[in-house]
Image (cartoon, rainbow, N blue to C red; front, side, top):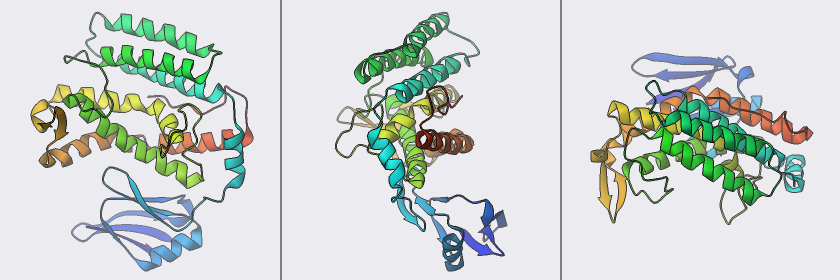
Length: 301
């Protein structure tokens, strides 16, 4: 088990068998995320208070279960801006960004299915329509849904694809996507909470009881990272039907495979953790300054 401690204004991570693994100055720390089990020393808790950074405790699937230290629930100026915002511009930018990333993801295929260029062309057409869209949220979500159906068919041309069915777990691919999206959701949610957003108030997804609509909104441009990871895992034999138990027509990952799936799904998300932080930070600054459309944050795969 790793240990996180404090010494001479530095955070130090050590492993009893391997010694020091990481050292970082507290002056450079905005937040400390601890994933899984780890011991924490009391001097570290005092340093978190002194330097004003929160310690965010997360499960192995990135679900936040506790925040120690500085919290930002009192960011009333941000929440007033959230509650008074009534434009479709940011939401449109999010969907345009997502479609851009879906197109880029399809272009990654080394040996493209003859139909792939057709999928890219169709996505490009929806991208153009979305860029100039002047309707309501329902219409915008309709365009997003159409784009995603096209993208999934093109991205999963390496299997017999029967469509995306969220949370129904009708096949092993949908079940794996649910796991990956949950991890992504939790990472985005923890960053939003760090800035003090009301994550239940979205700009794209409608408000619904106990649904973190804003988190659902801002994870959209990052979804293709999970989609591509699952495709690669299928090709490499890391993700296969035999890893799942079928219970009441639902594909549930065998508990003995949890570590393997968490590992290959976590790796690409950790690789872009800096991009996620920069994206949420830019969104915070964009929202607080109420800049014009066109300067909202963008994530590129």
